[in-house]
Image 1 (cartoon, rainbow, N blue to C red):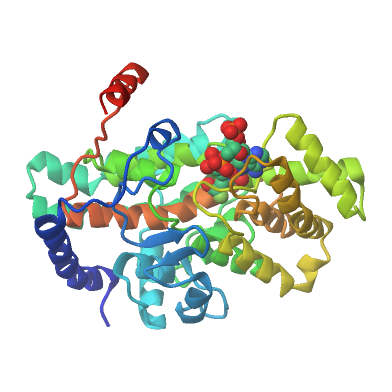
Image 2 (image 1 turned 30 degrees about the horizontal axis):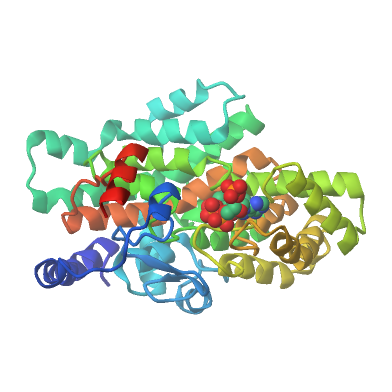
Length: 438
Ligand code: FCX
């Protein structure tokens, strides 16, 4: 059986050919207009970047190489003894467009486990950070510092050929992914449970199995399965979202994957993006505290209006591209509904009830283009129920996951020889001049 690297090597030439054809035969084909609203509106809707692994349809949601989330749940191999697809099988699909066998997925788990140990200086660096520093800030610092051992950087200094870029990028990307669980878990332990011994990486476990173990939740099978689903689902959401796009932009300068992904993490750390999952829990708990248990739909409506009237956004609702309920949200809801212990949780019940009234309130409010829930509306509440209660940590888990998509594109960008990203900007005066002359 072929390894991930060998499979990737096999599929690269066809994609290189595809790009060459697009360049030679269709370079001048128009795919859309650029309007003033795109320029002043955060480039919403502009089809302007290449991203291979997934495409987001506003109504259907995400597809990974054409596969929907339920498709992936059917065909991607789970971990031994588990039901949910693993991070490894999702990575395989994202990178190659192919479905790995259970054996291939397991071999990749072993490879990642064998590379997962943090260098001693990284452990010391993370241990030296103040406990009060936000876990996301710590994660970005750790990921950037891992570039100490970047294969891409050292090969670039020696003058490697362009055709070798992707192989060194791949090596860095796999090492980065392998080390993320130990890094992310060390941050959790230092911030929330200092002094407890962290177990060693287990060569027989998948990436998420190891991650839960290192976090100190080794015996918690429910949390491990949930995290497998969570991490596979959050892995990629096409290229224009702020974290993926940041990784792509920084990577396009030929900064190594550690630097590119560190930058991406700081985009993920914003409340309009990945931090929303911590915000949802905070908001739902404040609602629960104020309204008590057995909340009615009318009470939730009132609370929603209070949030909106105070000028805040309703966290977990709305999206830059999606115009329907996020299928990632639906997959997580289905996970909840299949488990009586989750359905008995008052927080999960509150999420469900909120979902039953929030779209109508947001429609009546009339601002958001998408009044439906996104994945963050439920993700943190399940973590809370399974004992991972420290919500400032939640975006770190998202950060472990989003690496799957970001590293995939970094490898493909180098394999395809994509150029430095450099859009043209305009001042308002320049824009007005252009409008007058058009
Ligand atoms: N609550 C209240 N107002 C909202 C809203 C919400 N959930 N979503 C959008 N709006 C408002 C916007 O703030 C904007 O107001 P303005 O005109 O005064 O600036 C208006 O509606 C139009 O915004 P819209 O075009 O619909 O949305 P954007 O593409 O600008 O923004 C996000 C998309 C996701 C940032 C926005 O919906 C939001 O702030 N949601 C809450 C935070 C959140 O859940 N983020 C996670 C998103 C995602 F899943 C992820 O990246 O992880």
